[in-house]
Structure formats: C-alpha cells, structure tokens
Amino acid sequence: MNMDSANVELLIKKIIQCIYNVRGVLPPGFLEKIYKNALYIELKEQGMPVETEVPINVVYKNHIVGSYKADMIVNKNIIIELKATQHLTLDNEVQLVNYLTALNIENGLLVNFGSDKIEIKRKYKTYRKL
Image 1 (cartoon, helix red, strand yellow):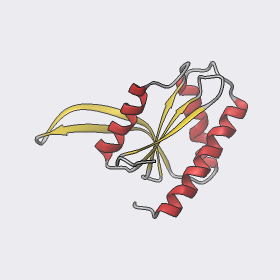
Image 2: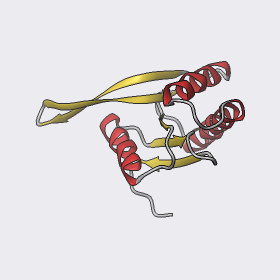
Image 3: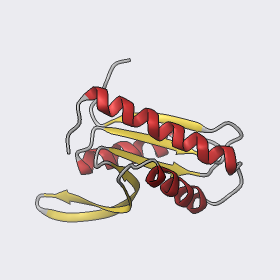
Image 4: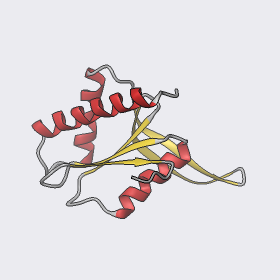
C-alpha cells in the first residue's frame, strides 16, 4: 500500500508517539522482546495495522541466498527495527537499510530502548541528502 508523503509523515509521528508512550512506562534494562511486545500493543491500540517478525528473503539471480526477520512493519509502509543496547551502531543502521531494500519499503525507524536517552533514527531506502 503506497501512501503519499504527507500521510507517511503523519504515520511516523504517531509511531514515534507510541514509542515514547512505551518508554514512559518501561525504562532501559529490559530485553528487546519486552519493548517489541509493548510497542505492538501500543500501535494496535492506536488503530495501526502492524505485523511482527516479518520474513525477508534476500534473492540473488532468482535464488534465495539468505533470510532475516523485520521486527515490525506498520501499514505495510514503515519498518521498525528495535534494539535494547547501550547505543546504536552503524551496523544497526545498515541492517535497517538492507531490510528496506529487500522489502522495497522506503521508510524505516531504528529505535533503541536500551540507552539512557531513547534513540530514534529514521532511515530511507533511497539515498537522500539532508
């Protein structure tokens, strides 16, 4: 389902509010799965269609050469990749961009619940100069 940019921006704002709602109740220190389950509940309560553990196959010359699972996809338009670590790394960012590319989804959010200050980074499938 393709959304226009205004609707994508609105959806991302709603998702980020849900992330902060979860963080307001669950401080750093829990496992990633705890935050994932809580965010799933929050997104569903806000009426957002969300899928979890979405399989991603990497194809090379019509052969599956590997597979991954995306933590969450909201409205078939935004991938959310969750972490619960001290800080995000470049590898975390590359992982999300690879998921965006493999699923042909333009927008993603990389979220780290593990640091003292929550980290949220927006990533795109297509390179954008800021």
